[in-house]
Length: 305
View 1 (spheres, rainbow, N blue to C red):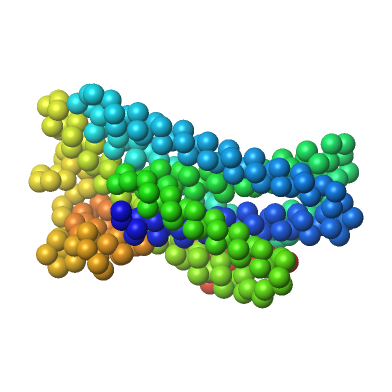
View 2 (cartoon, rainbow, N blue to C red; view 1 turned 60 degrees about the vertical axis):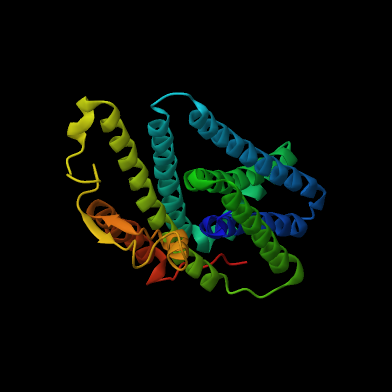
């Protein structure tokens, strides 16, 4: 089992899970301040529902991948790589958008959550509305994580699943220590560091997604000669352009430390011009938006608890 495959999943799950833990902690604290602790059970129900729904989505995606992999067809490798590329594109888009959105909204997170819960308490069936708010918060973070796992799990599920479990446990522990024990955590610095690491992980996922897309086109062109025109680059790359790095003999990505760089930074022992260009464009656009919103000016201001 390649435990390194669980490292990026652990980082994503830790951040996403801790964001959900912050929301839940704010809800509990507000209910206590409002004298509505009788609704705490609805918070737990919302949490449980969000976790179960996330797991069900994970089983659905895993079932789709396994069903495609088991299909006795010469097009199975193509469909498998296309699915991995699709999951990767969705995960890149969602994680990037949520990272930037959270950077913008983090400072007002507490007031926004409290306003939503206050509105729920003013209505009938307040408990169900509170549970729904918590359910949505947990499912949102869980769906992004599950999608990322599906995009990362092409070489096996055990490592990513272990990484996800460790991330959830770490996020839950941090949330408990923060709200119940009074542990002092520099949330600003915590989210700042995890934000940069998450950008590195997403950038690595982009490189792998492009590789899957290129592999699907290569296999398709080999099966159906009519599609050979899609491979506009001579050599072993259809869509990614010329080879710019070959570190198979210097820094292979299947051995330490290359395997660690692959897990955390998206390093590949062979890199093509298209991958390098897309990686640079990702940092220029997504990284630029992230740092302009929170890195250089506000350094992703943390929620005021």
